[in-house]
Length: 457
Image: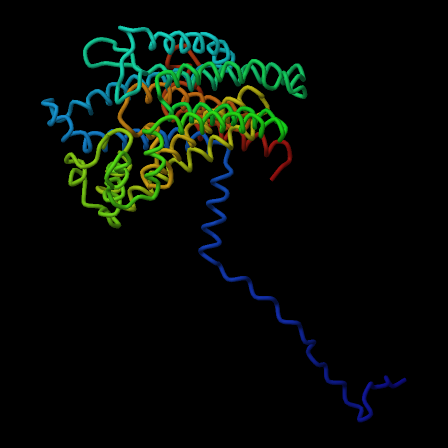
């Protein structure tokens, strides 16, 4: 029987090729997006905060040593001292501070909490001792120093910042564990009275700048503790009222307030000489500066060139690139501190990390804002950067706290535990050399063989 054809002519039908929809083109590789993705992945790694705190603080300290040496040479020679006099003292303080930072980074959290009360008691005792005639010293009109013999002095109010952070964090953490922070009296007492005691001892010496930093730390602790808005605004109003009274009753503070935004020296009480010459130093730096050691303003025109106004000399010698680098380092340090405070489950670590971050960032903002003419000159040093051992030692100990807290994160602890040294013994292993742990490649081989034996490919 003949097979019927599908065509009237009897020819086999023509098979047409099926049209396929064109395959979508792969998206073009955007290098900017790829770089952003890699940076974001690196930013989210467990040890990012640890490296930012450690690297940022070391870079700020080293750059500060360089700028102290450059900015203080003329001042030292004018005082008939060797040109490296202030640099050697700052280097000694940085070496001691490095030891304190390392010790603090290796201490357990329990030991940090145990040190809170001794540090607070010692700070209060020394701050009260400053007001004793014959013991306390006045520098630039502020009675906040104790002589240690020779050219060495100590400013106890700088240690009051560290004392308030540690003691306040321990106090709030214990009340948090007992669920007492829902009551306003437990939120304020005894944190606010003790903070006001420290503020009173500081203001007896006339140091308004340190009092502002201490107030910022207090507000930071209250905010982290979850203080209600009305309570927070109440404490802020009382502190603001006290500040207004203290400023109004002091011609020197009123003169500093009048120099905000000044661009030319004036005649009278508010001559704005320091503020204006700080602007001159920044303006003459340009993009990359005049070079290390080539500052003109440090030759007697700019007061406190190596202490409160070292950022202005940095802008003159290193230019906009140098000042932006310093700002970026402080921004990275602040971000890392916030990250440590936000990722921990330990209340004490959260409050202490938040307090240290508030302290360093607030002090940096006040110092740099004064140099830029945006804030009144408060007389506070730039953390880790300006000359002054009394400010450097407690700040480096506080940085050690942040490093310890960053290492103590669960993800960071696991990442550090997985590391093995390339040479030598395994971490924590003792015994003779022949009992060394396996090399990294051998460990990977053992893991791969176990995976294959379980049926995985």
